[in-house]
Length: 371
Image 1 (cartoon, rainbow, N blue to C red):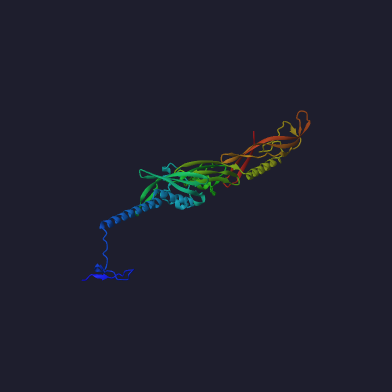
Image 2: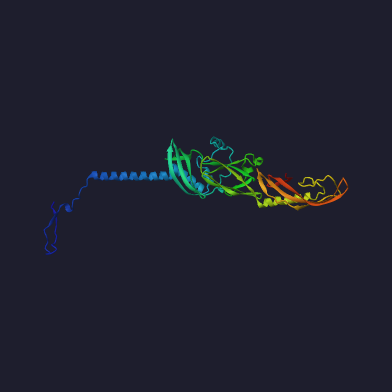
């Protein structure tokens, strides 16, 4: 086989140049060593494995770690998803578990609902530590005006496919032991509750005995009373520690409406006493004792009604000691010499009284003569 040739024309003279031999009609390719290719593939593989490992670590941290587990629970509370938060493994507990945790076994769950939740904000997982199979996850969050921090104990609860499942090792619920003085009704974050509905004794509940209420932790709970008889400014309770027992003692004040009603009842009671035409009206806090005879029946009137003010008395109320003035007109005849003295004068006296709040929300008022 003859070598192929090609002619080139000189760019200046136009004369064909010498033929240039070309073997086989094409230029032979340069060969690259196989070791170089294998090394490159190995490097790519290492990089790919590293990228997959890094991606897996990020996914684990964001989706499958104890921190992610706690973060999802906190997000549920922030969104008001109380029912979903209760279903998170390790949250809901029964009476035996409450007692085992040192909490009241009869604590009511009335506040474990959306209507009683206050929102959380700016949730941030700040640390996770592990010891003896328990992960301690610490989170910070905004609860109302407070920047608060809580730590949760989390443990593994098997696997879901190839990823771990988690549960709270100790429930994040807490208990508020609430005593309300002067009222059986109160509200928590605007959600109204009657103590007799959540107390184990029901309608027989002692008004001064605390009622135990389960609450989510974390959570901010504003407790207030606003009834026709009594009211109180709200008291804020921050539940930031799982399994904590938080005592709250709330003293109410009588409302202006309640005081006005008691004032009217006291005025009417004394006016009724003044209709009795005797020196010592029966069951009344005033009288006019004499040792002589009276010529005719005395006439009473109330010259100055008492100014009523109320003070707490356990679960009920008392009328504070206060002065009033009655007026009597009567003629008195001396048994010694028969002379007649005309009496037309004021008779000061003091009253106090007891007010018992009845189960139907009304009040029983008893007015007494004060020493």
